[in-house]
Image 1 (cartoon, rainbow, N blue to C red):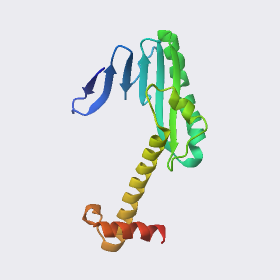
Image 2 (spheres, rainbow, N blue to C red):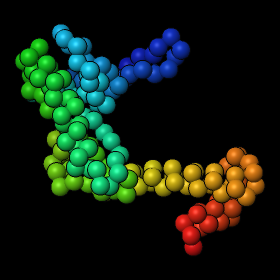
Image 3 (tube, rainbow, N blue to C red):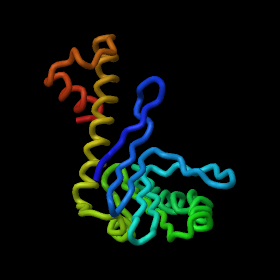
Image 4 (tube, rainbow, N blue to C red):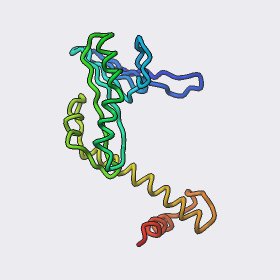
Length: 174
């Protein structure tokens, strides 16, 4: 399998295409259709060349209470695109929502959705990544507020590790 990266005039990566004998993976790529479809850019598109199928994968980290709702939104969001791809290229097309809550909450259908994606995927690792991302964002916000409140500066990089711990404890109320 080989990958090509495509760049804009400003040399920012716009999308990446990985091609091999069995599959083509498109990332950050619009699907060109015969008619205007507002939601034509899923996060990842996998075209299985042997089976003649398309997988439209859309990823989201959502609030814990909205995981099931967000999955349904993702499926409905790409319904028109799915119909258009089937019509234009006569291939089976499936929308796969990958939605995890900020604290690692997943829906009952999450494992089924992820199992449709080729390759080995550990649910534990996916939820761990979501939790670590949430902790990182929370830590940044808490340090920013603490640092601004106590020192009058917005530069987080000047805080030592003891100040970071103090900031976290101060804002969670312990």
